[in-house]
Image 1 (tube, rainbow, N blue to C red):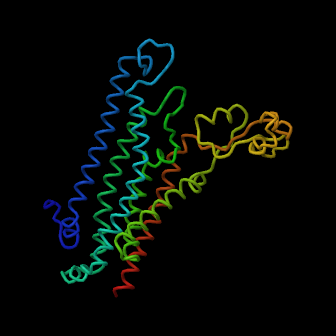
Image 2: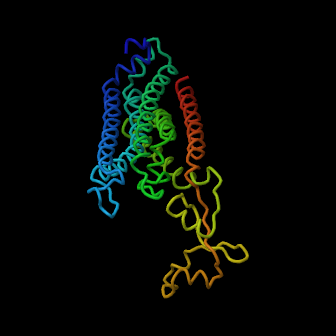
Image 3: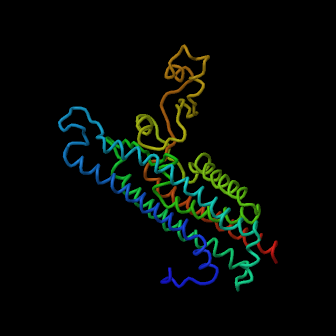
Length: 323
């Protein structure tokens, strides 16, 4: 740390929270090493079977090896862990880094040690922001590198689809954006609540709610969808992110499948039910894999914008309460 010439509130923040910071670094290194190890293990098994990742070379039926299955399982839970990281960051910043000083009154002493309230808050935002941005970005890069090799199956099928909410959040820059949002939300929650445990809960729940809202209601609208019909609509079900699908009538009206799966139509096959309603061809609104980067970049920009606004709000609250 001496090489970084840390001074004032930043040095105090790093010194007081050095154990969690070292633990975070160790977690990043361990996680990255695990992902790389699984990737190498799977590659070594695949090298023995040039025609496919088969448990026994020469089998007529394609099947994943134990290495491949284990790696996919680990990646699935690892992707979920990327969201958990953001929640933990929000809770840590809100509680131990901000609310605890306010709750215990320690801020009075800190603000008399040549540190202004603004410098005190800035240190508690900058230090975790730098750490989590670097760590999460590194993990996302390693995870994407491994995912590109492991999750791509035969015929374009992906065992961990790029648009799966957790996978999507772990293989692009949006993961770092959510981590930075967590820092900002944590700082604001700590200033508003001023109670360690309560601030941790508020920050974690708020960050999680924002992430779920974006994934469940906003993300699909961040980039224009493509509409495909006929055979392409059927093929899209396994290769693209389908946001809406159904059938078109001769006049172009869209018909939803849902009424044909109701108990009242249980005696009729869905396809025949749609034909009775006038459906003549399938349609689907999709995000193909080429939409991954546009969606990621737009979402990253939005989340970073919200994080900036929350940070400004935190300084405003600090100024109003401790002018």
